[in-house]
Length: 272
Image 1: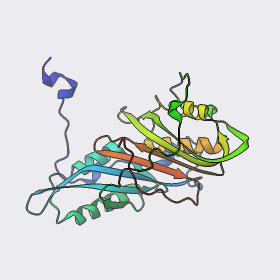
Image 2: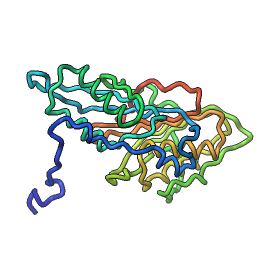
Image 3: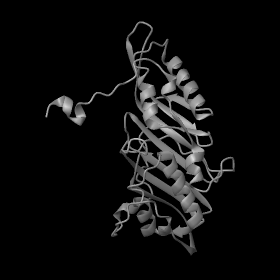
Image 4: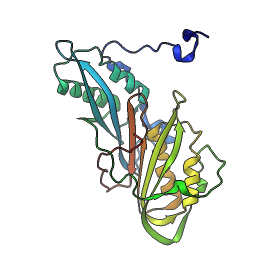
């Protein structure tokens, strides 16, 4: 078999010029309706979708390539999320386009993403540091369990002990789902911090693993985890953050929490 006949040998057309029409926004209401969250109703959570962009380049006024990294923050109350592949193609469209300086590039990206999302998107130069406390909390992955349920997500596994109120952080590196657009796997580390009835750890790990064959956007997966935990375990406070591994020069870190909580400081997971 020759190289052009191999799947790896197939050409992928990348945009040759800046084009904001490459961005593909998706109404959040579509995924939230599946969670019983009516369009226009008050959300049970606050949050953001924080993106890290590792591969950004453009040309200066004299045609010399420039490179940079970015942190993008999209509020969860914007009416639309931005599909990740379209964001990758959009950022690649800067490669052969001339800009006066890095500030002009960031301003253009902020304006385009805000238009696509339907609300203000913050664009900051650079990436946050690796999280020095990434290993904090109780790791569920060492539990000695037999598991054979890989989807769809099964919230019946979620139980809480009403006679024990605790405040703790539980984490797992075993969250995996699939992109509903490309079918590619999405891998993440998830952190669940709560105060309330003690959540059963065996059941929580089984629940997280049951996303393994599920096709849903990153943001929707995190909202599903939040809503299911809130409904089944009745915590007084709850925070769910997933840090997805990089794909196409981007990683995404959705965070959802009960109102009144403070946005976690920007940080990257060692797997990112």
